[in-house]
Image (cartoon, rainbow, N blue to C red; front, side, top):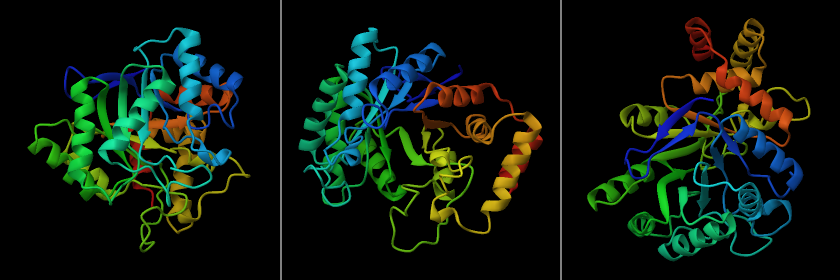
Length: 328
């Protein structure tokens, strides 16, 4: 396994594996036996960066979620796992009422929710401190200063280490970070957005969350990362839920545009040259790129995980990387 640092403060920064494990469906669609097997193998391989959320996976049974965090708590206790494993979770998108969704009835990002939801996450996970806590989705009904101060209080108390943000307009990310800096409070240091080798359409009007590409990373985000090298991008859904390789998992509709075939052809060409799978090339392309990108990939079986782990040591040549970058 290889590692990189997230965060800048010596008191809160962490060394995490360059491949993060998504636990979204653990404890729901992925049963406990398989979830534990994947987690055990990931840790055995040197992985130490696991991602979840307080609302995972509410849509599987019409609940408010909490399945994933609760399973991770049971796994931690059964395995004697301590703070050597970095668990990131999120708040803000948990449905307030069972049977509703995060788009019409989310818990939001008020100071009250931040405190109460983080306490509940710690309880489900069985930890005294959340290593990394994200603001999951935007809450435009709450003053951003209240959100910033709410998160800052948790860091000051020691119940949260690093702060992150996902699925937010970049101007709101920058506003929150500026408010935090002006107040002498910790700000967001990890950004989580959907990012893969294929690029979704960006011309869908009036849609903060285009179908199939929630919070997609684009040119503006990478420009921001280049300007703020202390920030880290965690890229979720890098393998597009099997869309690269499975006939029963078609690509989301926002990838249906003239640029997709050329990007796919480049991936397939490099995969053939390296003897790797297309999925492994996608992950290796992200891991070895010039910007600090950490792919966040889920796995429901150990076999899927093994394929992903092999990407960590897949070296792409400068020519191969240039071809992957240039395809359009």
